[in-house]
Image (tube, rainbow, N blue to C red; front, side, top):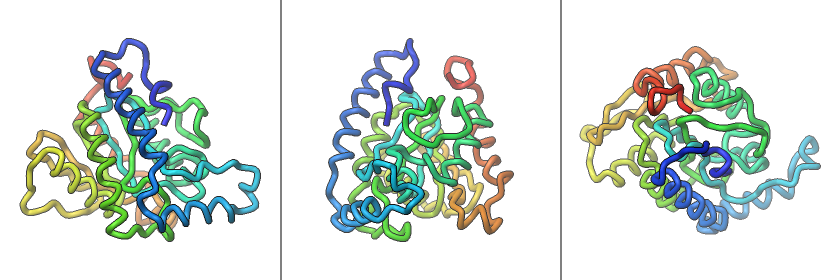
Length: 253
């Protein structure tokens, strides 16, 4: 969410325009109350927080994306975790899924540190931006189709504002479907046959972008061995291979 703190000095006017647009979108998202079921569940999570987090002032509101306004890599997850992003106020922060993602981004030069436990902890994404299909945590991590549809306009606005994106990494089947649907709508094309989800699948899109699908780094996948660190690293190694060095020949700065 801290867009201004992530954007280094010397960005172009285009990046400044994107930052302003993303800040306006952030304000819109955090006041959203479209999905009454999700609003009720967010409130229940805050009221019933576990003892280990009893001293936390939970964020408890919808979450916008965050990262580099000129990112060429866009990462899309499912939704904020009930006691992760919904607690800390930043996506993929303060839970094991976030640990896996930040470690991978750090290894491949997309983040300045390998861990993130809370907003304002110094994390800065480099040439990368993180968002999600839903902006609120759903019960049992199972959103309703109507809730996915209700959030699509926010993803469409991000795709419009993040004009430098070239590679999209979708974490999980729901995020993959939502990404593909939104991207086809944003760029006004249809992909036939429609790409199928599978870990490590790489799909060049007619718009000149590349879509990569990955299993989500949830504990359900990582603790069962369905997703190994090597498998997850392969996703970001492929993204780095496609993008090459950072903008202007730097390492993502």
